[in-house]
Amino acid sequence: AVEARQNKRKFITRVRGLESYHINPEVFASDVSKRFACSSSIEKDAAGREALKKGHVECVFQGNLADELTALLLGDERLCSHGGCKNSNYALPKGIFNIDLKKGVPKGRR
Image 1: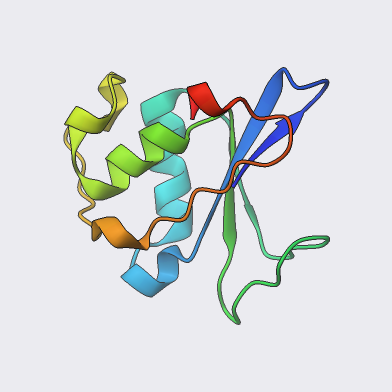
Image 2: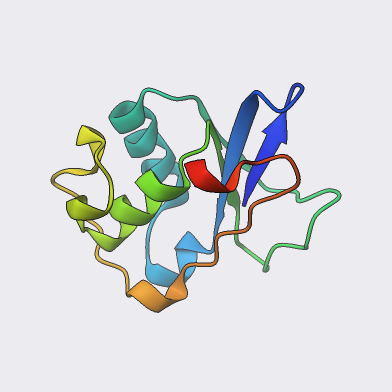
């Protein structure tokens, strides 16, 4: 999910369910932080949002990284022009992504 913060100028991107595909969320958050020069955190409690599965966590990233994370997780660098998507070690199937743009997020920047 991508959410608008601070008067619709700042965004955060949330990623869930990485454990189902044998991806360590802490390692993934660290990798994304280095690749895209953004802040990341791990949340164990989804207060005010849909509940997390037992034993799962949610990665939260600074910025609207929906396209970049999709390209990174698919392992397809052609989907995004950002250089951080290159040499991806992830290769998830294409049909598993559900990108949810919250109120205030421009559709063209997705």
